[in-house]
Length: 147
Image (cartoon, rainbow, N blue to C red; front, top):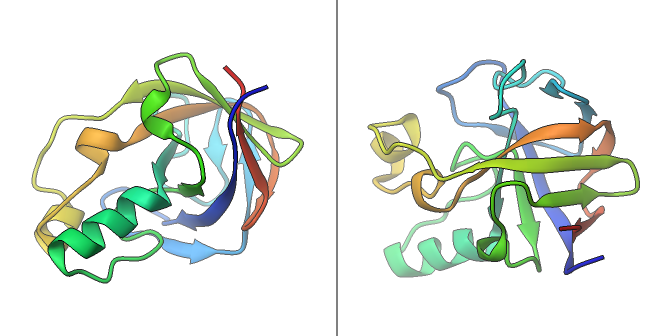
């Protein structure tokens, strides 16, 4: 078992290319993603994760007031050093849900986030993951790096 933290927030949007809205809980489906989220499907970028600490740093550095979902992320974790993870690393949320990192960062393009706020974290810090085992995740659930 590894580093422990918590789920700071969960955010979803019905379609890709939109800012996400915070929800108090979400249903994760194995090999699919988060129910009712536009990024769900049969591919390696089913769930996106960022650290809450990175969001806070950008807000401080840029004088912004960005919150959950504003970076188009699904999960903000608190208390985990996501920069230590590599492709193949796993994160457990609560007791049931296990996700695996499939990609770190992505091609930077003029997204809804960068056009709206002038800054984006997913290209440099975003963890893109697939769901290995599903279940329900709630805001405040434990988050733990497993490998």
